[in-house]
Amino acid sequence: MAIGVNALAFVAVAQVLALAGVVMVLVWCIYFMGGLAWEAPKKSLIFNIHPVLMLIGLVIIGGEAIMTFKALPLKKEVKKIIHMVLHAIALVLGIIGIYAAFKFHNEESIVNLYSLHSWLGMGIIVLYGIQWIYGFLIFLFPGGSSAVRSESLPWHVILGLILFSLAVGNAVMGFLEKLVFLETYGLAKFGAEAYLVNFTAVVTVLYGVFVVFSVLSQPVVVVEEESAYTAL
Amino acid sequence: MAIGVNALAFVAVAQVLALAGVVMVLVWCIYFMGGLAWEAPKKSLIFNIHPVLMLIGLVIIGGEAIMTFKALPLKKEVKKIIHMVLHAIALVLGIIGIYAAFKFHNEESIVNLYSLHSWLGMGIIVLYGIQWIYGFLIFLFPGGSSAVRSESLPWHVILGLILFSLAVGNAVMGFLEKLVFLETYGLAKFGAEAYLVNFTAVVTVLYGVFVVFSVLSQPVVVVEEESAYTAL
Image (cartoon, rainbow over all chains, first blue to last red):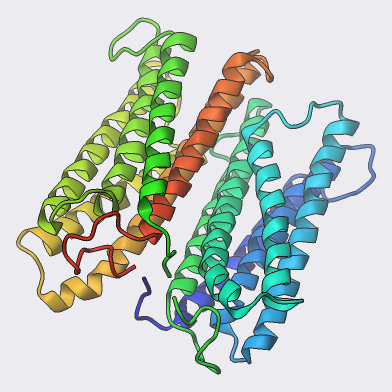
């Protein structure tokens, strides 16, 4: 099921939303929440690394990796390597971001892995890793037989989009969870920070929707007919 | 992009997950949270209507409506009516469920519409209504020209799946939000109720994933070749 629309518009809007999301999460974590630090007496600065890396890494760079095939006027083999490298960066940033959350919990003596957000997050990062390894082995090196590749491709695309959607959903849930904590400790429900966090989450959802739309629309420039996503 | 797998397995698993979800949300709201009531001195019983109707209505019955085209061995026109009726039920239950949340807030003097969950929820229910009306007018009565129908179908399916995914994500976010409130008031983070709520949310996510998979797989029985989802 594809939409008979050029992906360019969706990709362009996604870039604007990505930029907005990056700026908003940085303003929130640096200006409102006091900044980022790996070691600090004020432990909340360690936590602040978590939303920044999860949004910029797993969600935004992950989304850019997904859009590679539709957005770039390059040969399939080149796009494949860009796709793989961007997903690797997303995965590594995601793992460091999750580690920051554990580090904050441990140094603040907060229990780990009790919340739904953490459960889904662990599931997503593990599946993301498996998906990356499977993709690398089958589509890049050493590469499966052409039968295995063509059988695997729709699963790779669909599972990838589902994982990406779950990552977007879990990021949004993380924003909500943190905001509920902050509001419990007195943050104004209709104040500037609450609006900033909520709108960052809304921008995140819209970015996710535009990434999905770009995958379902027509490639910007078809260099080779058999481009991985052209079949959509 | 479709998977060369019969939808039957996905639909069957989705039914098991739907049943599990219904039982779990009822056990939570009735056994753990004290029951459901439209009028009650204990206002939390009014709130309890909200998760029950949103999960059973918007998410589960909405998902069943989506699976109709893949799951039922009936003529297209009959499936279309079942699809439309199920979505109407989902929409009505969703609206009543949202009303229950407002009613609880108003009677407890809690402000409305400050949370991300409420913002996304309002957006989703409005788009759901628009999607239903558009579908009814174009595909059922009076019906658009065949050009408009064939141009609209992929948008209807894709927007519908995105809306359904957002509904699933927002339901999961609602479970998390309520649980954070309860834990702030002393509920054990690793107690029976917390596990029940988190696993209900996990079951909800899995149900959503299986509904999406069923749409992307092959129809169980193709009665007519031009069945709405066959083209996927």
